[in-house]
Image (cartoon, rainbow, N blue to C red; front, side, top):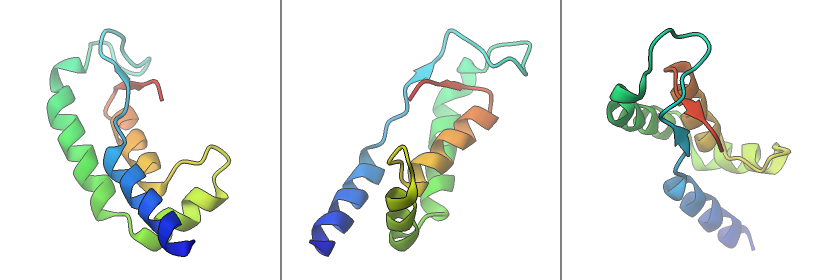
Length: 88
């Protein structure tokens, strides 16, 4: 059972694709940030990967009311802080 949960979390972290509204813009920026989306996705994916371990992913996933892994939380927060509107 433990192995199954670990496998599910690893697959979930690898397959997370944020849905980003590229036409909108964050309220803190006067101009659109969509022109940097490709660079920001690659950067945020790498930041999330470097700052996540399997153990932290599992503990975060079990304690999170939204069932998000630590990887997803970091990835989404990074994109939001770069001015993108993340919908999921």
